[in-house]
Length: 219
Image 1 (cartoon, helix red, strand yellow):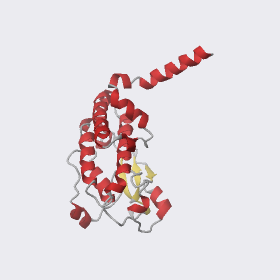
Image 2: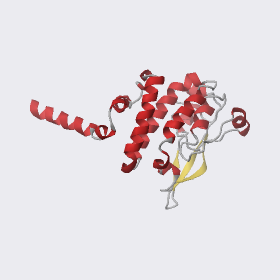
Image 3: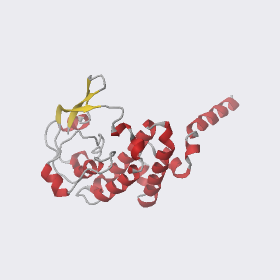
Image 4: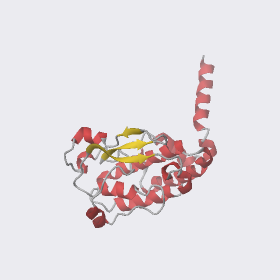
C-alpha cells in the first residue's frame, strides 16, 4: 500500500494518505493482515496498492465488468487471503480527479452496489481469513453505502435508496443485525429497513421538529 497525489482540474497536487493508519502501526516492515484485523478495511478500495501478479492469478481475482466498485473483490478478498503486506510512506501514483469520472457518476451503475455486495460476500467466504475479517467487511460496506447516499445527486437518491434498502434487507435476513449493530449507522440502517424513501428523506427533519416542539411545550 502507498500514498498518492490527488490532481485536481487545476493540475495542483495534494497529498492523500490512505496508508497512514498502517504506516503508523507497522512502519515499512512486512506484516500479516491478521495483525491489523480490527482496521484492515479502514482505507479506500481505490487503486492505492499493488498486488503481486502471480498471487492475483493464483486466486483468480479479476476486476468487475461494471465501471463502479470494480476493484472491491480484489480489495476485500486479497487482504483476506494473503500473509504478507507492506506499506511505503511514499506517493507512487497521480490520481486525477475528474467531474465525469466513474467514481463521481455512481448513478450510472446503482444496481452494481447490490450485485457487488453479493459477489464480495461470496468470494470473501472462500478466503483464508474470511471468517475473521467478515465483520469488518460488512461494516465497511455499510459505511460505503451511506457515503455514496450522502454524495449522490438528488435526482438519483430515490433509486439509490431502493438498492440500499434491498441490500440491508438481505443483510438482515441472511447475516443478521448483530454485526451491523457495531456500525455508527445502525440507527439509520434499522430505519431504512422499514421506511419508504419519501418518509426517510424527511425523517431527520421531522425528528428535529418534534424535538423542538417538545422543548417549547416543556418551557
